[in-house]
Length: 86
View 1 (tube, helix red, strand yellow):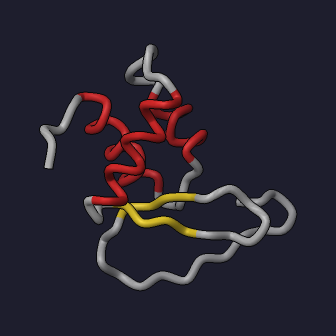
View 2 (cartoon, rainbow, N blue to C red):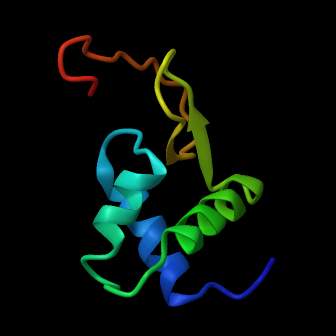
View 3 (cartoon, rainbow, N blue to C red):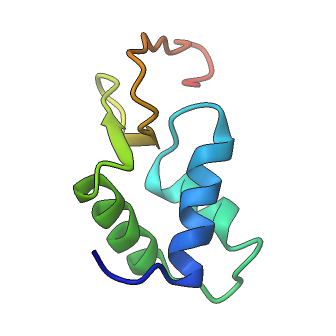
């Protein structure tokens, strides 16, 4: 496993503290508050690496972009509001 960078630490922190699955765009929007020059490609790359390292898992909602959440080892059931898509 590679050394954790500042970008990776912030992205992981955003996902862990979100309390709900986030899209890569949502992750990026929250992460740029701490690292303003963070690129969207870097966000996608770090999310992919976190998934490969089993730190983050993908959550699929039908008809929506993929979302990601902290892999805490607990089975979860997810619901999506049809009105606000959250």
